[in-house]
Length: 437
Image (cartoon, rainbow, N blue to C red; front, side, top):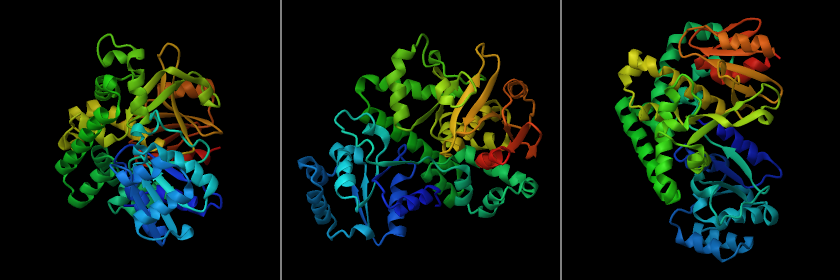
């Protein structure tokens, strides 16, 4: 299964002054597989250590953090000497042993020749009270579910991926129904690696659903296992409210939808916990469309999305015939799935910060506002071929962005002020917009 993150790992390996690398991401997005595959492909040897229920490693790191002693212990555990240039050391589930996380500072300072990659679901890592985090001594790589591009590659559609990579929209339009069918499959299957693998092997939507239900059940168990007991009910209520939040025409998060009379202060910690674990994406409103958008962030107004579009369709119990046949039920929910899909693809683009915009009276809204570091790009999302864009046109007339983008099921088209980008080509938004500036 091809992951674009593998390229980033090779770039890390090639650095002359690399630091230990921590791969961040929600549970079951493929961190362990990625590390092991990288070790297999790029190194002569790989030492894999999981700290989950590992008494030997816990005692090793709890004694002291002398790097020479730690390496000796790791060699004894692995059963062979470690040759630093030829060996990748993997620390998995590192949040289970906080001292192992702290040790990365000393590996960086005192033994930089060792090549170390770590992963730990953010459950417990960001919030662990005893952890002395090695600030400035590590590097990070964020891993998300498979993007739509990676999904197509997993299904053996490399030629379709290549076509989009060449910006060959004339040919892509000829085969647009194939892209649209693949996109609907992605709405249902999503990008969680196990769900994608099941779909690739069996092409059975019911089996995919079973996998997704298992993943959601595992997340629910994580709530009880890792979160403070007093906030677990609030985490569950907030988590379960997200589909209803996204179904609204105005997708701004409303605490009152969790339960009547709910207040922000009651759910702040629950929301922070889900966000730190990578299970939700929080997209804030930008009060003004000016660089940098971070300076105009409205901390009180935000949209909340799930980690994966397939899990969203599972939580709403959307049936395959509803999605694939496009009947009335899907048409009611298509806006939520489409906006979730677009946000999910944008999150994989490291050079883009994502916000949304609305005026003070909430009478006009732009679905997403993208900060590329050089430009502000308004992005409107349409689930079908409806091309009315009153808010986008009014925004463009008032603020004069270099380029405005509408993402829909319609064909690629560039006008003087507007780029219509097909939903299946959202992964090209960076190259399309940079070509206009």
